[in-house]
Length: 121
Image (tube, rainbow, N blue to C red; front, top):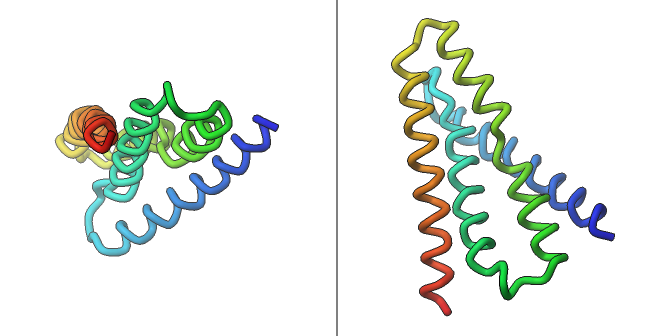
């Protein structure tokens, strides 16, 4: 049963990531990977909320939303690929900014997600 929940959540997360990426990239004429950046930040925020609720959330919910949805919504492989692509395109400054901004914003979003959930309780 847990495997099915993870698979269902992952399917939803992958589709959400694709739609977020396409919607955001379509609005920017830039080589910077804004779509992946946004999907990773949204996923980090959601995972921060789930982490804060982990003591009270069911194993099934954590599998569905944490491992499945957030695992597929956020993507380290695409982040790595797009950063390498920026370097190959000689956009080294953008590559460095992507790494720094992704790390800071990802941790910040996770912290904010946890803080929002804790404040609601």
